[in-house]
Image 1: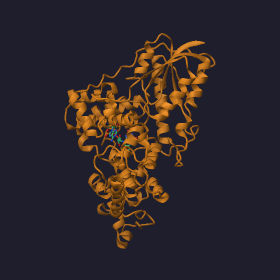
Image 2: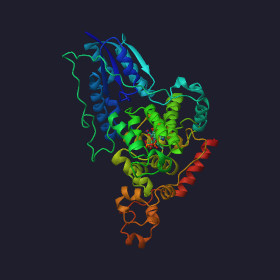
Image 3: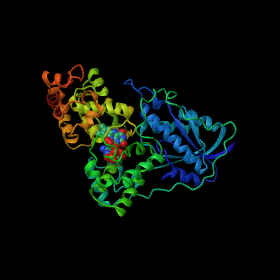
Image 4: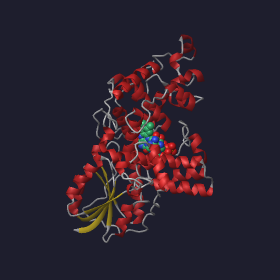
Length: 484
Ligand SMILES: Cc1cc2nc3c(=O)[nH]c(=O)nc-3n(C[C@H](O)[C@H](O)[C@H](O)COP(=O)(O)OP(=O)(O)OC[C@H]3O[C@@H](n4cnc5c(N)ncnc54)[C@H](O)[C@@H]3O)c2cc1C
């Protein structure tokens, strides 16, 4: 049997800044790459929707296609399989003598469980696992992971005070000795959405997967459009593509290394301008690192109803409220616009995410884990640590020092979408409403409803809860639970 090394790609769909690939290039034998579509990732959750729905699935499909082309240019074949990873590696071990497996570390328990089963199939192969998803390596931090501060600002101060360095991003190897595939081993096709058990997309994907697209967006946002210099002022916008970087789909799927973004920020600062906006983009990447470290420190506590706190918060069960939230039919325009945007495109701005998550937990009082699972299903940029970490934070059971923080979704819409253009874009039934009414159609009397031809309860839903009363009730329940 032919001896070889394998680079196993998971959430690192790129060839730049890829330590496992660099290591494999230096290894003695020929190299082959593997990507596996694990059916478990596409199964229905206990809540009745797919764990990975079509938006992210399509993004991953495109990213794998791009990865295959980029590896081909380096002389390496990417084998694509659809099946249980342990079974796939078992099958490969019948055809190839696998000496080494190079892989990036995944901190999620599901990924580690799968990796454990794969290792059992390859008892004679050596595994080399590298860190590669963040700006900072855990071993470079000025503290042990168990001493990670429980607030972001303490974490940031510790990093900045210690002057912790971001290691340079690695260039891709120029040439690798690729394995010549034996006749009975096929490259394998990328499964279609229907083969993954998912429905077809109803519109063109908003973001195209692949590290080639990631680089295009990076250059376009920072240099061609020169948007980085105003990032701080625009980042809370909800409608325009260039309000924020939109790097997250590529960062989350590993098509883009955060170290490359960091280096481009520094280049931009040298060539253009260094200001609060350039610092702010670094600051947001640091939030990403922070949530990854929180996950590393707390493991599966990230998924507990009580999160990182020792409180038992009573979460409500209400199917109708849940449905209304998911479909964007709560009667609160900001929540509805954002939830419809999520279903249609797999994306939502950070400002909108904060609001819909706050409404879910602080007005509807629903179990935050179901909201997080819906985000996991729909988001093209889903990342376990960032998603669950942010949900915990908003639900009040994570890394927020404030006891009870809730967003007023009507005030937020006025503050961050003052002309109502985001609301009108996603809520066609409210398009003709003049600005004061678009923020709170619930306040329209019969005269206005007739005048603007929006009948509440028919053309647009009546509010599912009273905004103020629900928040006050929730606050009392929550603080009661905290006091015990
Ligand atoms: C409830 C909730 C769930 C979220 N789920 C995810 C998720 O699954 N995946 C994800 O990548 N982000 C998540 N975020 C964080 C944030 O909303 C997105 O990263 C951001 O909206 C992506 O848009 P952007 O790339 O234009 O961000 P920018 O504002 O341009 O920020 C640049 C990058 O910094 C990182 N970043 C920014 N804000 C955060 C943050 N609060 N937490 C972690 N990283 C951040 C992202 O990688 C982002 O691409 C969530 C936020 C909330 C409130």
